[in-house]
Image 1 (cartoon, rainbow, N blue to C red):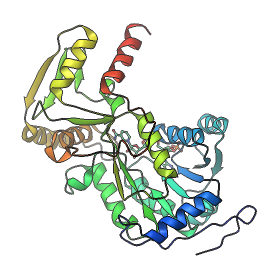
Image 2 (cartoon, rainbow, N blue to C red; image 1 turned 180 degrees about the vertical axis):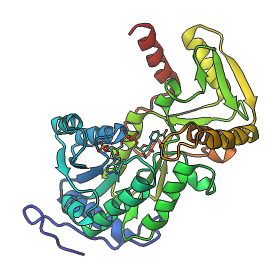
Image 3 (cartoon, helix red, strand yellow; image 1 turned 180 degrees about the horizontal axis):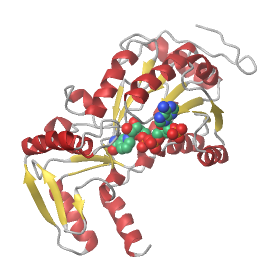
Image 4 (tube, protein in one colour; image 1 turned 90 degrees about the horizontal axis):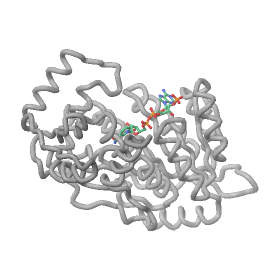
Length: 341
Ligand SMILES: NC(=O)c1ccc[n+]([C@@H]2O[C@H](COP(=O)([O-])OP(=O)(O)OC[C@H]3O[C@@H](n4cnc5c(N)ncnc54)[C@H](OP(=O)(O)O)[C@@H]3O)[C@@H](O)[C@H]2O)c1
């Protein structure tokens, strides 16, 4: 155990975590629990100025945690002020310096990453953040995954998820316990970018099987669950949630009921055809440096429609008192807002 100078002699710690952190040993659990009792929980967040990151901070503050956000010197001052108004302690750091970041992490019981980007962020920057967490003796790390369960898929099937898998190879070799949160797709995408509900055409566009259920979780639910996990000293390596799971056929019924209009299922083809279209889209508009080029969204749709993405169990009930927003509730709120802005 390391003793680091922190506050009024509070114990900070470097817990000897086993490399296979799916089986946190008893000693680790007891040490972490005792430490959490002794200390006010300090959670450090990277990516706190982002959409998900800011909501994770908000959920953490609501749960009484002391929240430290590391941001870039050039991060939007308005977003920094919003965090500060929440009660978050914001620290501007050089994101290339693990040493500087580690000073911001001292005493934290968990580092949560909600960074978004391509290789330079998900691999390069996250590695620096992770190294800083290890150097500061932080016992737990939540990487910026927040996706469908990519462990079921193979490299090459989804560029953005491949980056996460590559980062895991590094993460799992570090002396720190990691917990990935799988949330399927953000439910808000249903009324935004995801071409699944075509409101104008009154179609539910899908590929493959009309009865295959797709997992959706709202951003606030993902943030609240992540905050709970950050404060939980004994999380497993993977946690999987789905605010709701609906098939295209069920979605058709939901949207038809809510709008009072008759929506139809529209199936341009199976997942094989979608794969061919992804290849064409990638060649025509590669958008190599874009985080979400059209073909990337199509890859995500294909993964979601694949039976390997089927959720046989979730960890939704791990933390009591969470209300999981259903797809019906989300679309009802969207529809109420769009018809009565
Ligand atoms: N499952 C889903 O459907 C779904 C959908 C969307 C996102 N996600 C995932 O959710 C996570 C968060 O995404 P988001 O949409 O909340 O992202 P976002 O709003 O774009 O925020 C990205 C955050 O990362 C920071 N960042 C980016 N590049 C950085 C760098 N080089 N150095 C330091 N900080 C950097 C940004 O800081 P600045 O403010 O300084 O730019 C910002 O705080 C990601 O893992 C993303 O893939 C999942």
